Length: 470
Image (cartoon, rainbow, N blue to C red; front, side):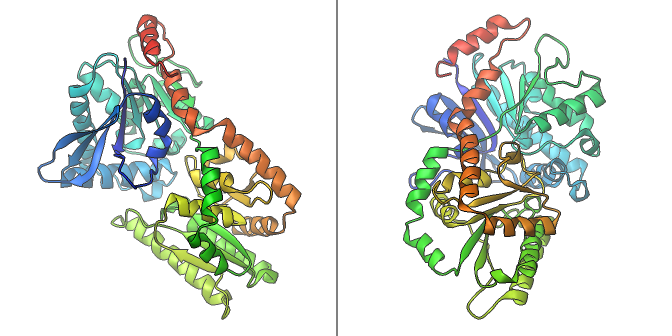
């Protein structure tokens, strides 16, 4: 039976008593249904790196250490100083160097070396995210022709932005070595098709053959969801915990919540300005509403992240200095992480979810906020139109995060929204969640990957037969 090889930058090895998060939640159903090998970086940096495998049930986790120079060039360098800002439409923040590109390619070659030791001909390879764009090309250079798919979790900008990246003509077309390239939205897939049409002269539509031979690269949108009903049950329990009750009891009036990693793509500073406009334009809410912004720090060693931390802290201080009263602080800004259970309870207790990234591939906070609500008295989601989730969540209050007046007006509208409208909007949003539950997401991608192609039907049929759970 074919194994599913999951390849990502980091590997989440299950640990007793530790709640799953991030990619582990997204892949939970795939790991449960199939025999999987998950390969990636261990998170450790060593001058003498090692690779080892951990067995958990029917699944294996193969983890690699990185050398200090690999971490600096591959991860901190090219992945997070070039690809991350450019893919989030921030050309101005990209810092390109040939050394970092070399390190990025070198680590992809290392991953390919480790995979080459493990892969059998019928194994299926599923690569995740921008850290590993050239991996399929590296595998093919080693004579490996396994069926291989790629999924990009972050946005893909249009060719006008992609072509601003040095050596884009070598890196981006490397995605053509994959059999299936998946994106969060149709817009992202269309941007890639436009890039290929502009740079390589391929037809600018969603199905095309790229390169020589009879293997076709296909594109598709596979928006990531969440475990909707399970998260709703978790929130229903968590909202009654002592922690959530203590938070709610300490807050006068209504609660607005924002939960984001500290990143310039999340639009937190702009969001603060929108909240400030709301307070200024609606003094009747003084003392009656509190905005809780939970923002764990990330990538603090990168200059741009230190700068955004200072900008957000300054904005929170400015608002509190201008509007606070003895018994009320309008902004609570917290730089620490909370468990998924605690966040679920806080979502359920909040009257407004404020999710306004300036650019986001999907944004699962928006989906978790909706899933956490009590349908008899739901809160209101205010969502950036530049988040991938906006494609599914047309019933949210969609805003331009660059327009503080619009964000402030949306907050005022959410605060005053009648119960019947809130219930109607929530029902539409919750229905969208159920239609795209994460339990089926992995199977949808793997089914699409196993579609037969011209000249390769027998091989594809064998692969499909091995995907017995699909």
